[in-house]
Amino acid sequence: MTMQIETRAKPAKPTVSSEGKIFLFILLLVVATSFIGPLLLHSDPYTQNLLARLQEPVWSDGGTWSHLLGTDQLGRDVLARLLYGIRVSALIGITAAMMGGVIGTALGLTAGYFGGTTDRIISFFITARLSLPIILVALAVVALFGASMTLMVLVLGLLLWDRYALVARAVTAGLRQAEFVTASRIQGCSHLQIMWHDILPNLFGTIVIIGTIEAAMAITLEASLSFLGLGVPPPIPSLGLMIAEGKEHLLFQPSLVVIPSVVLFLLVLCVNRCGEALRAIQAKD
Image 1 (tube, rainbow, N blue to C red):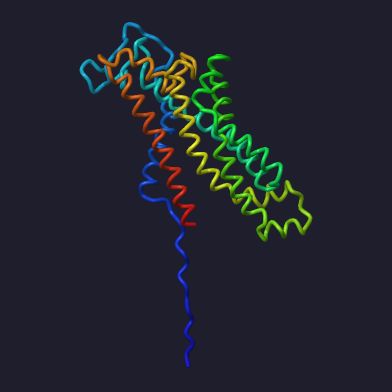
Image 2 (image 1 turned 120 degrees about the vertical axis):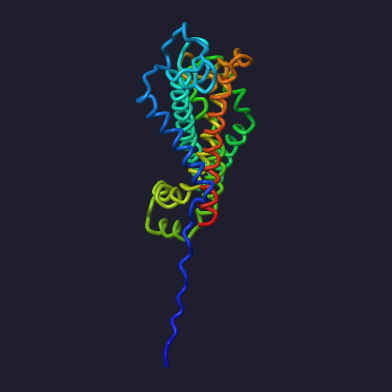
């Protein structure tokens, strides 16, 4: 008599979809180019040459290979400024998202774990933050203290933490009575040890997904403020500032507006789509 052994197929590990891989590749390509490109180019984003101002891109009539994407109204190389602008926008977006993540996760984790009065106080601050329009607050602060890159990061980081707090609070409230948390309490672990070693690792995936959303939001807000003249101060290259400077020549040289607008669109789109791909992986896991 032979015994039949049942074998169960191992569940397939969640993988990134083809669409997600494409957007991730584009995002990495754009960011890598912004860091590697300036090392290969001989053009400086700050150097002005009024004799070569408003040159067309290389594919248009009058374009030259010395300035692949043409020059702006001050004769500065558009490609060099574009690469530096991507770097500035990405740096602001990532830094603001990380800053908001630290603030929001700490507040949400504390509120969800302790509950009671602590939860009500933190929930009040979350509600107060949700009632404030981000763009108006940022405009008021920058107009009051002046535009600078450091202030831009601080303002966005201090405004983009509410999503982290809401999600961290909800997840932590559901985990605080879990068996592994109870076991840690029985072993004599402190509240800080339980939150750091038991609950926080379960929040990491969700926090990363929210971080992609907030990074895209920060990049968009920075571009909006720079377009209004209240973001990154000139002559620092910024995608929003390049669009603002090029709008005066939109009729005769639309590439000054179209090129940074397309790059900004691709950057925000890729960040958002990568976040959606990560959310799909987490849902399957």
